Image 1 (tube, rainbow, N blue to C red):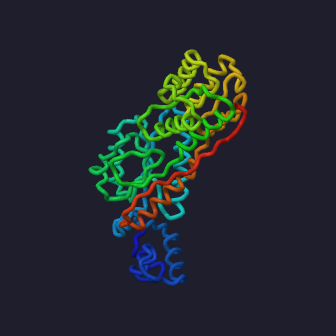
Image 2: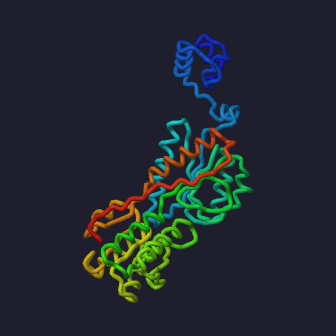
Length: 334
């Protein structure tokens, strides 16, 4: 394997000049740069990026942790966020190390961060499974910036990049009310994380704004899987005379729609339906489903942008929350 001395000899320059070209530490003329790059290519010389990064105290690597479950069809949401992050960081010469907390266990999340620490990451972007993350004080120890995506946990200083789940939920229920519905069922994933809490709050706010009393019997809190969505819709229709249904995440929406189609309940004539997240399957139901669309790719781009600013300005004291708007996509189900 060629070394830097051989590159210098082939290019007819000093070792120091080769080093300056590789590390961008001093001005080198374009003609000399071209000689060095040509010599590196001819000798198949690969600079030691880790050694360079240690000298520069940067690895140009960002860690990303997201919870992706094997059975959860909404994983596309986090994968799209990851694509946005990767595209934005790549433009600035950064790479992404992605880790998946498929167990949704806090200890697994901590272990993933410890692994990232051994890789000397420059920053961490995370959708934590916890609503309280003070453990980061011991795990991260402020060695690098943290940007939280999708959820808003407490206990550690960082920036937040989120979809406006409250606003999306509010708009969905307002739309149903404006179409004459007052008995509106609501199915949500487990409460505790900010995402689910905000969507429930949006539902309640829409009811309150129109003078409709909140009825807890119309709310089903379920595990985020198809079966729970199916059973929740079944229970709501059996126990209550609802005329509309709002489901606050994708996989629960699939289960609920599956039950409605099995029972041949006419949508929207017998029951109006709005789901959360806009996936291809929502366009091919009968009728196509009205949904709240989240800006998943844009969340990723914004998270990367915020991270880069933090790295460039490490002494910036104020932390910020960035809310990206959702969109109501009207189709035939309401």
